[in-house]
Amino acid sequence: MGNSFRKVPYLCLKLKYNFIRMELIRLKSIKEYHKALGIGNPENPLLSVIDLSKVEPHPGEGLLSYVFDFYSISLKRTESGNIKYRYGQQKYDFDNGILYFIAPNQVFSFDADENFSSSGYIILIHPDFLWKTSLVKTIKRYDFFNYRINEALFVSEKEEAILTTFIKNIELENNLNIDKFTQNIIVSQIESFLSYSERFYQRQFLFRKINNHQILERLEDLIDAYFKNENLEQKSLLSVKFLATSLNISSNYLSGILKTHTGQTTQQHIHNKLIEKAKEKLSTTQLTITEIAYELGFEQSQSFSKLFKSKTKLTPKEFRETFN
Image 1: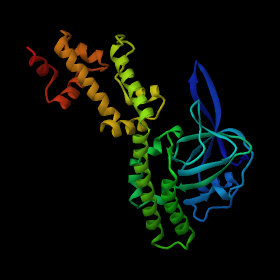
Image 2 (image 1 turned 45 degrees about the vertical axis):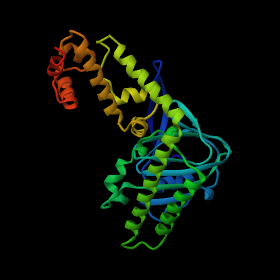
Image 3 (image 1 turned 120 degrees about the vertical axis):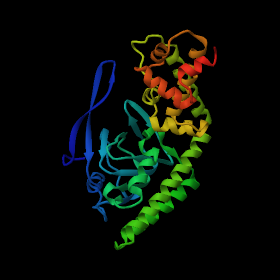
């Protein structure tokens, strides 16, 4: 990659008290990304569509980790060689028909062999391109920009053809002479691309039932183990981050699965479980409300009472009185 890119130390996950250190390469501009691929400067410094079939394969350089100051959307197929994408210390093998999204400041790592080549497209969008458009705010609502690489979308040939149509439209418009209509036309194509991507992700959640049900089963096991843990000194309030980390998936992806199968976000699911367990303790034990709050992981009983009333319309005391 040369020495023109800014490299800063990046500290990976701590494993058994040993730290694994990698170099993190920050690409601040789309122009720098083009230079990294060995292709010419972008037509538009704030937006680019890269046709990977036109990028010359280059020798693998081992594990490389990047962080971008712009959005990246990749629709790729591996044509030859092998590539392993990483998140933390895990490797994931992909070959055909994957779509993944990277938001600014998100770490992305891969390890390609020297024979690796791929086809497909990469859309690069600098946040400044979205300024004063509808996407400047709505792009943040698409959870898949915060999914891990192993949670990429597997697309069918038909789905890939639909997405490629929008990519071609974006590329065509971006290569034309820029006028006052250019930005709005491109943004409308990006919005359509993202809407279809969201639809296809919902399809994946439904079709990958076995894998998702295994995740949900493990989720319930984690929650059950949490409630059975009687060590109050080690106990903190059950959180989305804790569950997602324990399941080795991103918080957004976990919520996506739950929304599809239960209609609830992970936080809503946690709250319902907490209230369910609280009702059990209030109706079957003589524990004080403060003791119940601490057993459930709340640092303050007031926080517990507030959540309980918001969910049941009764205070914990009022609920307990209905059993007396």
